[in-house]
Image (cartoon, rainbow, N blue to C red):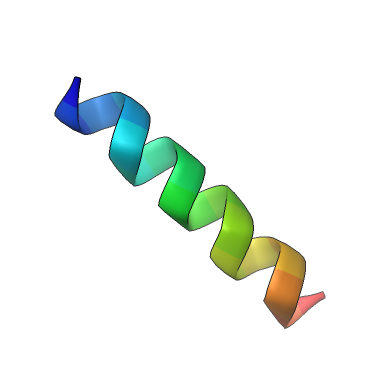
Amino acid sequence: KYFVILYIVGNCVRSKAS
């Protein structure tokens, strides 16, 4: 489950970076 959380968090951060 940790991997899923990291994936979601990373995706959110990438969205903000974009």
